[in-house]
Length: 139
Image (cartoon, rainbow, N blue to C red):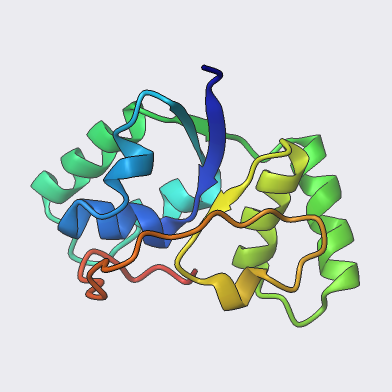
């Protein structure tokens, strides 16, 4: 069986850290999981982040692959900002990361991303908790 690849949005990692939500994607060997540089920044920039929380975030991120902001991502970001001027900058950067690498996106914020033509959104797990205490993230 082939390996599936996906990009996770910040909110999905927050839900995982808080409640172990999305285990079927994040703990399965059948998925190669990527995250954007923006996601790393959003997770680590929380005010009052405890040392133990920071360590949990860094440990989690080591399991996945970072998508850096390179020329492909910045070109796609520019295209998205021109085409969708009301799209938040953070959402445009996450979308650009997914589109530049041809990755589907796993996010809880479907309404933010569903307008983007060509962006594949993965189904979220049903019954996930809605609490977001790990975040001051903008996505």
